Figure (tube, rainbow over the protein chains, first blue to last red):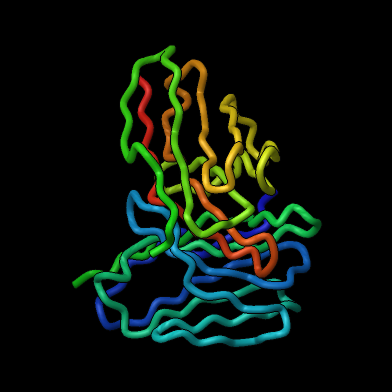
Length: 112
Length: 113
């Protein structure tokens, strides 16, 4: 079963609007990470939020974490065409394997 | 931009051929990973390594094999390619300690005809 599930699966908005993506997970975590993947490319790490943090900002990105609901959201403000990509949340598996489990991703399209 | 490289970027090959996908990183990371990803879908971990001479199978069963003879190099081999192996293969690495943040290569798009 998946550790992380994302919602919506696809999102299409106009340039300049804000985009919000959500991620839910199942087990306790010590951090949650968001990655971006441009079409046909590898993933790029965007931001990490620790379990004792509720909100984190990085440029136009804002991430929130609610450990009681086992959910996180990624907000991209003032979207640009270059933000068009798939966005994945990832959580570490417990134990010593140091593996990440990725959600299904949200495909974001920014229309000019 | 992460210092992790994959070759080839694209490969079209016939059924039954042996192929090796190369992955190398210059960050000195101990941990390396191989993921398989179909277009628009989630990533599935197929192999990982804690360090030299260490390899483990991931969560998705794969007919591929890996080796880790050098820290910087983690090649993936398919002895006999089949159309069902058509997919994108992503290599990643991370430091042994820390937050498990992973650095990804650009991927190899494999098509088996």
